[in-house]
Length: 140
Image (cartoon, rainbow, N blue to C red):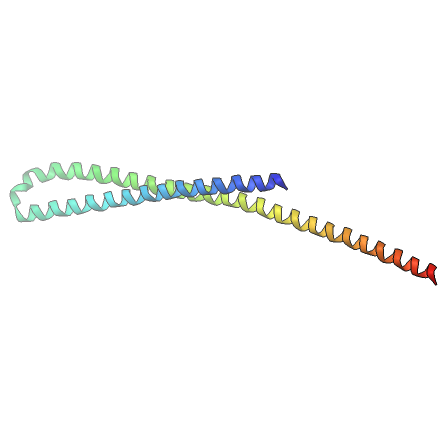
């Protein structure tokens, strides 16, 4: 009984640690999404500037090449963060499932012990009743 309680406590700690990891992964994903959105806004601002001042067209081609590479890199980072969140979520589910297995095993063990206790109590009461009955019969 003691070992299952210890295992459950340990598993709860692991679940809490995994939740922290998942929260960090969510934060990284959110940061990556913000970087992508900011980069897109910057690109749109540059396009607006190009429309306002056509002379910027001389350098816009070079900017566009660099911006596309940065967009690809930011998207790659965002997808990596999404994958990390997915992996952390699966790991959390796995650790939580293991915790539940230990808790169910403990409940089953307690139920079995209670059933055995009730059985012993019933046997004891039956014995007391039969001894009382025998004494009563001898007393008549």
